[in-house]
Amino acid sequence: MNKILINLLVFVGIVFSSCVPSKDLIYLQDKDSTRDKRTISPIISKPYRLQPTDIISISIKAIDPKLVAMFSTANESTSSTKSEIGLYFEGYTVDDHGFIRIPVLGEVLVLGSTLEEVRMKIEAKLLAEYFKAEANIFVTVKLAGLRYTINGEIGIPGTKTLYQEKVTILQAIANSGDITLTGNRKAVSIIRQFPQGAEMQDIDLTDIKAMQSPYYFVQPNDYIYVKPLKQKTWGTGKTGIESLGTFITILSLATTTFLLLRK
Image (cartoon, rainbow, N blue to C red):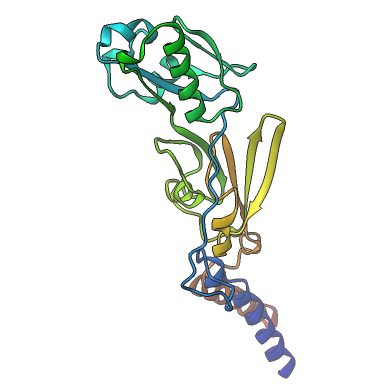
C-alpha cells in the first residue's frame, strides 16, 4: 500500500511539474535585483539600411506640382494613400545590384543606405541637374511597410505588414495574437537578412534586458520563430486544472483496469 501511495505521489508531482509556470509567461521581467529601478537604460535602435528586394515609396513635391510631375510614377498623384498591392506595383524596388529606377533621374544606388541618406541623395541630384533652390523641392522617402513573417507557437502565424517607422518584437507578437501558453518566450528565434547572408539569434523576452538587444526592433524581412515548450510534447496540460483533469482521467483508467483484472 505504501509503495502504491509513493508511486501515486511521484506521478502527481510529475504531472503538476509539467504545468507552465507563470515566470515563463511574463514579458520583460527585471531579474537583476541589484539594479537601480530608477535607472532608465537606452534602447538600441540603429537606422535600417536598404537591401535587395526592399520596396520604398518616394514622394517629390515642389511649390508648383507641374515641375515635379515628370518624376512621379503614373498613378502616384491620384491617391494620397496606397494599398500594399499598390505599393508593390508603384513603389521602387531595390534590385539585386542595389539600384532603384526613378523616372527621368534613372538608376540611383541605394544599397546599404538609410532612408535619410537616400532622401539627401535624390534632393542633391534634383538640385544639381534640374532645379534651383527657389523651387523648394521636398522629398520624402519611406519604406513601403515593414514586412515580417512569424511562425511557430503564435496565435496568428503568417506574413504581416505594419505601416510604422519602428516596430518592436513585442508589437509584432501582439499584432499576431500573442505567443501561446506552450510557446517558449525565453528563446524566440529571429532570422535576419544581411547583404552577406542570413543570421539567426535567440532573444529572451522574459528578461527586461531584451530591450537592449539589436534584435528587439524588427527589421524588414525578419523571420520570427517561436519554439514550443517541452510541456507541449508531454501532453499533460498547460495549467493546473488541465493537469488535474489529465491525472483524474489516468487514475480512473488505472482503477477501472485494476478492477476488471481482479474479476
